[in-house]
Structures are given as structure tokens and as C-alpha cells.
Image 1 (cartoon, rainbow, N blue to C red):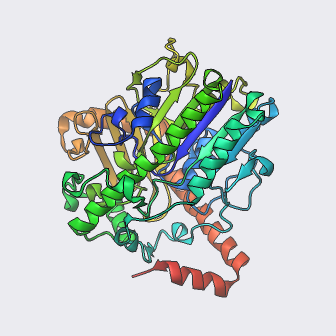
Image 2 (image 1 turned 45 degrees about the horizontal axis):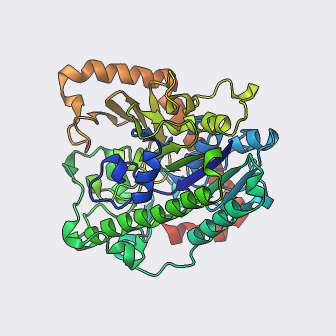
Length: 472
């Protein structure tokens, strides 16, 4: 069986018509969900590009592979689903964004079948300055610049064109194969073509709730400080960014439609399993926060649709799941097998569930964050309708995200919820030791800072820190 993996960047998993978000123009994603299964409560392992993608390709949690931030390579000893497929006779081709950090090998994504991907040679210095906390120079300007713009010819369109060429090639008729068609949008800055921008009129934009900012946990206050949004943006700028972000989702929806149409035209649809997902979400002003890195739903929730032969049509799975399940899912979808080294993977294949078979999925979802904008790490555990956020050294929050999807009512102040808080905290500590993980992340980041200074030379290193990071 062939596998077409369509991955986008920074897409809130709730923002599709098929996910129930009224007013979103996502006809092609809605059609994909109709011909397959949508996993409605899917979470990334860490809401930041590099660690999320590292976890995604290895099927491992970030605390296991020590990929903490946008400056962290993960060790080549951790194999990816590309290793599994290539070794078992299913070539993996990739067009678009992968986002690994050097120094590292190709992680199984062989250079002759990978285009447009750029490894980060050094990585993000800001993510390594956590205490004292760095303020990201120029971050707020990202919001000021949003709006309609001609973006034709960008790297996403190049990746899309090459993906279509692959599907139309003679080689695609001789599967099995895997194609990872990967896109940068709807990642900020929120520039979008005028035609998509116009789908979201200014007078129809609904802004997300801010909530009680004075009650934000210190780590979330630190994130607002780091990104220069500790003062709320004005409404005009906010509306312009919401329109631009939604427009970019419709823009990538167009790519999905073209890929699915080409599968049909080339006679490949009956032999191809399609997976659509994103690496993390976007806060978009919710709780006064922007971009990702936060433990709230807009940041950690991602889309996941699986469609193809023998997959149930129009099915919705409410049970929360993590993206670590996609490693075994992709391996099975390609007709390959897990290996001995995979015996301790935290995830399982989602295909039996997608096919309607009786299958047990992991009951607990874990997400975590150890990068720019926070002095300590945070950990999130979701089980059933409840979600625990453990801010290491700063306390807990507990939400019923079914009854309170905007996460405005922290249940830790409710004595009747303390048993749930205690139970989820116990589950978290069974999965990992927050103190050890937090300490390890900071030690690794201190080593990486020293390595950067050695590689760049102290003068150039100091110049980059001064240009990108501000300290009070």
C-alpha cells in the first residue's frame, strides 16, 4: 500500500469545517474527512517545530530523544519511520519542510529523494536562554505585518508542484511508496493571497476569548513577555491576523484538493492511504498569547485525518490521542513491520481503529515544552475529558476541555476536583519525573550554548545573541 502524508505547519486542529468550526472554508479537508476518519482530539508531543517533528518521525516523546527546542538535534541512533520503510523496500520521498537541526545525518530521509528541506545549521539561540529569560527581539512585528500579499512561487507551491509530478510519474504506478508532502503554511507571518483573505470578511471575524490575564500562570506570562505580547495587540491588528491565518488554512486546503484529485486521476486512490496532520497549532490571541509553545488547546491540538482503502468513511474518533501513534500507523499503512527496537514505542497503530476493528488505544496523552520563553518546563496530560497542566515549580491547572473548550475555568480551585487532579498528577509521575526531565533539558541546552559559541567563535556568537535576544 502507498502512503501519502500531507503535513502542514502551525494549524490548530479544530479549525476545519469538518471539525465543527463554523465559517472555515476547508472544502477539500472536509471532503477528505468524509472519505475517511477524523481523530478529533489529537495532540502534538511538544508545540514547537523541531521537537514536535523529531517526536513525530521517531515515535518517541521529546524527553526520551532529548530534542527540546529549535536548536536541538536528536541523536542518529534513534531511527525513524523512514528507516523502517526504506529498509523494507518502500522508498520514502519528501518535498517541503522537515526541520532537523545539524549536526545530524539524514535520519533515513535520503538526500536524493528529499527536496527543499533545509536543516537548521545552528538553530535558535533564543531557545537556549531560559534563565535569565530572553525577550525575542522583533517578535511583535510579525503581527504588524500581516495582511493580503502575493506569495506565488513560494516554497510551498514548489513542494506542491513536485508532489504532483511525483504522483503523475511512471514510478508512482509501481508502488509501494511513501510521499511526505510538507508545507510551511499556515505558519506566521500571516500573509495570504487576496482571494483567500477575502473568504473571511472583517465584520465576520470572531476573536478568541482572552480570559482573566491576571490569573495566567507565571510560565504563560513569561511566554507573553518573551514574544513581546505582554500588552494586548489592538483590535485591528488582531482581526487582520485572524483573517490572514484562516486564509492560509484555506490556501493549504487548496493543495489538499489538488493532491486528492491527482490521486484519483492517476488511478492511485485505491492503493493509497492518506494522512493529514500538522506539527502544532497557533494560539492566535487566545489567553493573550500568540504562536505556539503554550499548553492550551489552540497550541497543542492538531488535525488528524486518515483516509484510504478499507478505512471507514465519515467516522469520528473522540478519544484523545498523541502523534506518537503515527510512527506505527505509517509503518503498518505501508505494509511494513515494526522491528525489535520498536518494542517500547509509546504509541500503537491507528489503522485498526480507523478500519472499525476493536482496538485499544493508549488512554493517556502526554505533551510537554522545554524551549524559548519559559524558565521551567511544562507538562500536559489529557485523559478522557480532563486535562492536567503541570507547570514545573509553579503549580497545576486542571480543565474539563469538553465542557470548557476555551479553558477559562481552572478546576484546581474546586475541592470536588482534587481527586481528579491527584489522579492525573500520579499518571504524569508514572510516565516521567518532571524534575529530572527539566534538569536534563537545561543541562543539554547549556552544553548546546557552549557548542554554539565554539562553532561560531565568541565574537560572532555574542553578536547573534545581541541581535536576537534582549535581557532586562
